[in-house]
Image 1 (cartoon, rainbow, N blue to C red):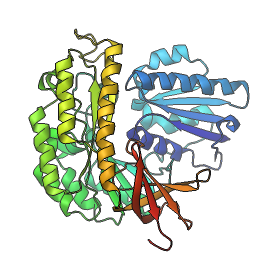
Image 2 (image 1 turned 120 degrees about the vertical axis):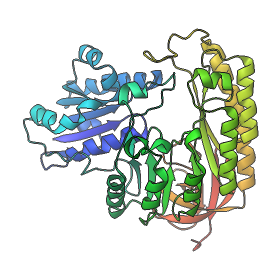
Image 3 (image 1 turned 45 degrees about the horizontal axis):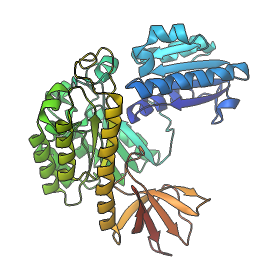
Image 4 (image 1 turned 180 degrees about the vertical axis):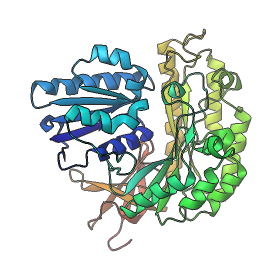
Length: 434
């Protein structure tokens, strides 16, 4: 049977998808990229915010239409199913099997029953990378103990459950032995790692062990500001492979709103942590996430956020307009902001960030960076690459590389920056220069 997969949502969800794909590594099945030719399609969904839920619904409905042709089995898993299982069963009768996250340990049994074919339980032990052979994510924990008032993740994924250091190192080593060169460490909150397991923050201990594996790059994502301790930064600075890349979602730039969001710390703490990072890392690349239009936001609190962005000058910034999520504390909070106001403020924020990025990119012209070649665009006769400043999730800018000689996908080259276009850089690799 030809089987295809769709993975929606974040990198953590992608790791789940890759573990599920591994269950189908069986002569009875054949992987197929053209979904219209598939006998089986599995959709792993996200259910974090409204746009993610809409994407999940639209994708299920789109693939369900294939049942009029070749499609025999449609399986839907993930956060959306975990959150709305009863509604899913009622609204999508075309789906043959719904698997919420809590039932992942039962997947081999559920699939065996659905296909009348024995599935071996290799979940977590036979992961198949979905996007590339040289870049992978390492999910070091699941769930979250933070209770941000806007966030549904703890409702979906539960409390933080850290995986033991030795298990994470073993998974990383398997990835390296299978050709992975760039390891991206992820969790709902990477800096909280180990607190539930060891009674202390243990990310520094984990990366100390990971750095012994000969990856080219190790990148850490999703770091909570108040948990970034100086000993972690010292450990990172001493590692050979850990990049000076800091993904720190701060969410807002006003103490009153941060308190309503149930975020720990203050604006001053955010400033102090970033100053500490820049003390240890001269070329630190700092990205963040902000929410615009949270309840009780005013023009004054929003201006405070703009002022913080101007002061810190983030290298990369992603923003969302606030999405009220049922069962969260902020869902029926008074002081809701009108959608038109949210959108207008969002555009002002991103206009400011574009100005900052333009200035930073201008200063990068003439500098040389090690870059990972990801693909070739024949229409434009150029390669697409990422430096240490770009995670593989598509949020940061990329480098468009012009060269007189063919480059190998998945290899690293030295690229000189020659210009920029919006968030993206332009680069040149001269002939025979590597």
